Length: 367
Image 1: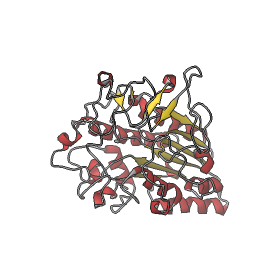
Image 2: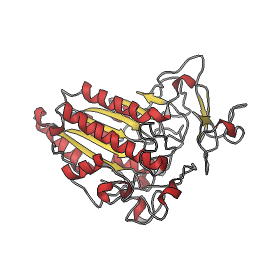
Image 3: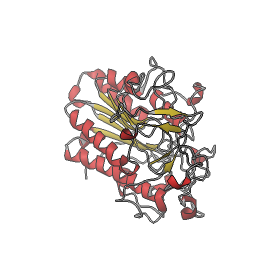
Image 4: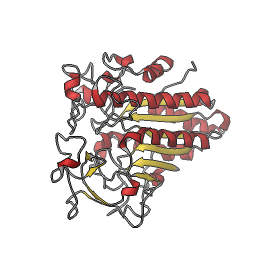
C-alpha cells in the first residue's frame, strides 16, 4: 500500500505554502482535510473501539501518523470549524456559537483563512460537505445567489449544506446558489415562527418516519422532523440517504478537474451527526443501530477517497488529514436507540464526557 503523510493542520498548510513560495510548482503537495461530524475516538477500531470496524481509518493510522493527543478548540461544531478556517480560538469571536440554518457568514470577508492562504500559494481550493459557518448578509433569499459565501473567503468552488442535516434548509448550496430550485415553488426559511398552514412534527406526527426525542419538532422533510421552519423549494430537497454519495461525487469531480495543479480540499463529512440516515448499503450493517451504520458509512467515504487518489496517481503527493469537529454524542435529539445500543460503553472511549462537554471527551478527537 502507498504511504500517505498525515501532519497537523498548521504544519501541513505551512509546508504547502512554503512549497508555493519556493517556486517549485512540481513539488507542491495537494492537501485534503477530512472533518467528520461528532465522531469519537471510541468510534475508530484502530483507536480501541470494540464495537465498530473502521478499516479505512485504521489504514490511515497504519500508513501515516496517529496523533493521539488531538483536540478540537471547542466541543461543538461551529466554533471548532471557525478555528479550523481562521486559526483563531472561537472565543475571540462572540458570535462563534452553534449557528442556525439561516445565520449569516461568521467569518469576515477580509479575515485571513486557510483557504485564502492556500489560494494565494497557487492552489485550487474547494469546500465540499457540511459547512455550518453561515451564509450571506442580512435576511437570506434562498432563491437568488447568496453572498457572501465560501467563495468570499478563499474557496474557488463550494458544494455544501448550509448548516447541519437536522436543520432547515434541507437543500444543497453550490457556489452560493441552491441547485434545482423551481421558480414556481420558491424556498422560504424561518427560525422564529412557522409559515401559516404548514405542518410540523407537533401538528402532524403521522408525517414522521423518525421520532424526535428533544427539540426536533418543527418542519418535517423527507419524513424527518427538523429544527426550524421551511416552506416550498421541494424540487431542490436533498435525499438524506444519498448525501454521502452526492458529496463523494463532488469530491472526485473537483480532484479530477484539478489533477494537473495543486489543490486544497476541505471535505466535511455529515456523519455521524443526527439524523443518522445511512445509505441502504450500510443500514443494519454495524449491529449498533443507525449511528453505528453512519460511522461505517463515513469510514467507507474515507476509503473511497484514498482509493481514488491511488487510482489517479495523486496519493504520493497528497497530504491527507482526518479529524472530527468535536467529541461524540449518542442521543442528540432523535430516538434512534444509539444510547441503548452503546449501553455502558461510550464512543468517547477512553475519555470522559463528549459533545457539549468540558471534559476531555468533548474535544479529544481522532487525528
